[in-house]
Amino acid sequence: MNTNEFKGTWNETKGKLKQKFAILTDNDLMFEEGKKEEMYGRLQIKLGKSKAELLKVISEL
Image 1: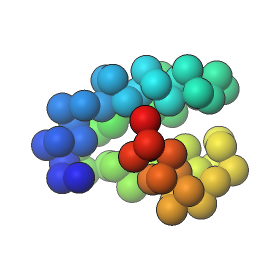
Image 2: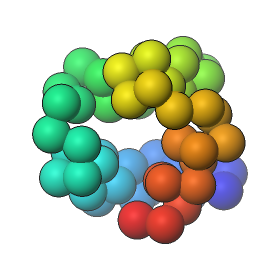
Image 3: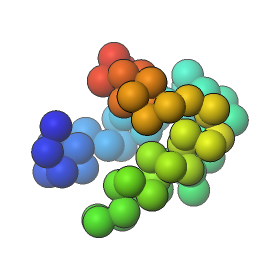
Image 4: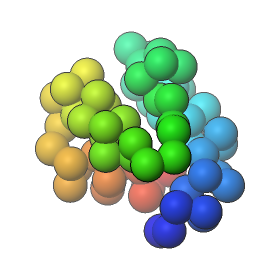
């Protein structure tokens, strides 16, 4: 998924992630251009998942 596709569907994806993982906050899911990897890092720490696991969860939403 390229950055434009990611940004275009992020609000929907963010809502689904918050439903699935109630511990996530808006700050955890804040997407800023050029900082996607930083956001993934925050999510990995908060959810205790590897990057591969995290990407799989996101792609399945």
